Image (tube, rainbow, N blue to C red):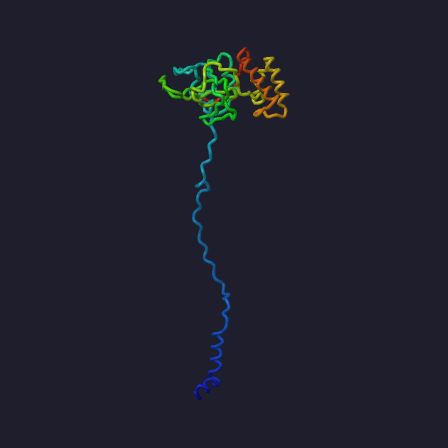
Length: 265
């Protein structure tokens, strides 16, 4: 016990012991020594800017080999009087109201047909403009392509037909939905006068009935929708459409359309 007491009182050992004990109980402060940033890594060689980009679309190039003429003779396929296949398909991939009026006009040989169903959905199998107005009983159409036989070989049973409507749109329908005779009152989709090109309008205005009807249509359809006409506007558009058909089947020469499908002869 005496030895232990001397050790605690010793002038030489006590300061060292106290310093050691203080060091064990003291809180460690965080080091403020700066850490060197990692050495910069040289960037890899950059890729070309367009390496992952889709190729830019090429500007359309006019094909000098395509014709824009309106055919006037039946295609020699032994399947009724229809236009050439390439023309018919090009026609159905767009909407060509002036071409339709030309094809419905006097002297054109195309096969006419009439809808015998009460209503018929106008599905365009070529992805072109599809009218939202369904075909109705008695609508007059032109048959422009017949499916189901090639090279004059006829396939028995119903077949699909591509038809052209007066408004310039196409539809693909079953053959049994049409008849070759007039089943009742003839109906037609309205021709939208203001959408016709200027040359055709000028030619049609030479007919006094078209001129009168166009003036009435302009007055009746002020502020109305020409795609969904109602009341007086609807009646005026019907009268104008009938007057146009009568004129082009009588003595009005329809000029070459400003816009027509390109096709390979």
